[in-house]
Amino acid sequence: MNENKSEIDFGPGIISTYKGKRFNVLAPNPELICIEDIAHALSNLCRFGGHIQQFYSVAQHSLIVAALVPRNHKLAALLHDASEAYLVDIPTPVKVLLPDYFTIEYRVTEAISKKFGFQYPFHESVIRADKKILRWEWNKIVKREHTVYSLMSPDEAEREFLTHFHAVTEYEEF
Image (cartoon, rainbow, N blue to C red):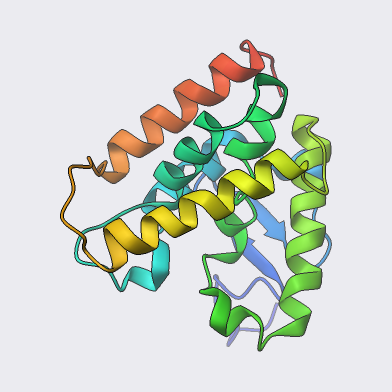
């Protein structure tokens, strides 16, 4: 082994997850995907690149999107941003400048859909709900319109995300 190589240098595209797995975003393996990694990462990722007054997680956003779709699409809605657990939440105006990112994001989301058994590409109801919530978030959270809304801490968001996942999947083992 190269003595100068760092312990954390896994190679191009390979990250270490919360549960200690080495996940290759360039060749995503569904067997290495676990809901605990996804819930933990999304609950600690802030929407809008963190450029908001209060912390608002991708996990909480996903919970709200899932609440707006029919039952048969709730799992897909809950996990519609799950690739961000491995790739982070890049604001769309920046993401469009990174064409390779979309290919990687597609492959990671496809692997997640295979792991958990939901439709991908997403059903129109998931896409519509995500866009609806984005407009609401923009007005209420980014532009800070005065309204009552409750933002979850990362720990709360992680617990709620896992609770919702298990309710939607009826405690299936993955």
